[in-house]
Length: 380
Ligand code: SF4
Ligand code: SF4
Image (cartoon, rainbow, N blue to C red):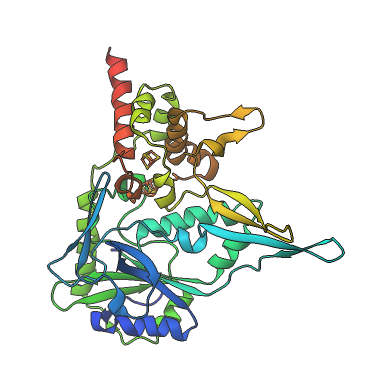
């Protein structure tokens, strides 16, 4: 059974999900959560619970994502879509400052005020909690705190949802995670479909407890707790053995010259899709733009990718001039050197990079091939 807060777990009827959204709004939060748009489940402002993807699920495979109707009305009966909470905490483009030339020729520089709209994230998967924790470490945990990220992160209310229906690409259990929400959340829901459609609700913070006090909940019965335990146990079971992460760090660093890097480079388009959909990738660059008459200019921070040729361009040349070098950098950073840098994998096993890779490159298969190549070599 997942961890619980100070308050005992309670039950919220599915019909009362609007009460949760209303309570969040009454506390001053902008409410963002999953909804169906353009054939995918994406994150957007939620006007009401009716905007949630009830009755939809996602079928995923390497290079493929499509929505299908479920046979029930599950609201969170899907895995993850192309969006992640990165778009809220580290938006694709953030203006850093703008400047205006004054009449006397001097420049007035105006720093962009930090964005600080209290926002509730509804439907945060356990892998996404892990991804947020990873980005927190990057942007808040070092010597330099990122001002914009800190402002956006400060007033976030996290409504997590345990996973009951992982996609065929999910492998969180192999990289230190699992289908039950743990760690940093305010409220965590487990959707129960057997019998009356309802949610087991756990609290994870004082803010969560305060909010829960405003909801029409009833005490959870032992049967409810068992049902919730079965949901996450079933999901964990489904993901068992999907990815062998034994000795991953050293395996990858021992195999920097594996022929597999050449093989994957033949297929990789270096489009960067994998890094854009990845909830942990955080590389950015800055762009300057000025008006044609030269009176105003601005600098923005924009998502970048280690798959772009320009990203490794520096004085004296390019450190990763080939697709082989760029793919190897991405994968070894995710699963090996990230650990040296931040103490965890840079991957939470969400499977997005596999589904949204236009040629269906599967990070798990690449590691498998490298491992197999090494074993073959040892037995030769
Ligand atoms: S692995 Fe796939 S998504 Fe990533 S850069 Fe290569 S082709 Fe694009
Ligand atoms: S590397 Fe792929 S599976 Fe891992 S967190 Fe990023 S998108 Fe998800």
